[in-house]
Length: 280
Image (cartoon, rainbow, N blue to C red; front, side, top):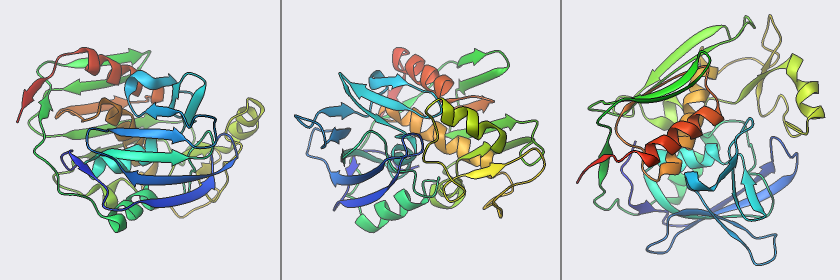
């Protein structure tokens, strides 16, 4: 994963349907001015309110991460933020004309491809943060931990009764595999039996077999998979996006099991509170 201190050379835009809202929105990702960080602008609201892409702005984490400032919010930010973080882009103005980013194909592939085509400025010398002591959060048997490590690594395990998913793990380090090949193509996933319940709760109204992997208890409804363990890889994608709300992801070994956006964000908040050692 690239160091930070970079912004885009030119902007790009993408349109599509939001996973939960079902609304079609247009996103413009633009170079940021000097001194700015990554932030969203709701162009459809009066005053075009600004929403920082920082953990302090997290409002809720039910099946996605939502950021808010006052009455203005933006949801399902994790895939785009993960792609920006993977390329070391920590300065970007993200304009959106609705409440939720488009899901596109359910992965970060289209975002990372657009970033690579737009190009980016040379990374400035960046301070790298290291973790000195272990840190973790848990809920029952689900947890996210951060352990001191000489290199950045993310390991994720999931365990579902549904046979197509089952118990699977993936461990990834950017020093060995590029994000665009190993993590970005992995799509969001879900169980067919949960669809009606979630939609009645006002969620996944934009989900479909075109933008998410869906299975019943025995089979995938829309194969083929891009990886044998695509769901576990997608969870790493989500974790990268949520950790990037720190600004710069510290060098550590992050290990998660049966976790969620809520636990990702809780760990990110704890990391913000914890003083990390800094090295130039």
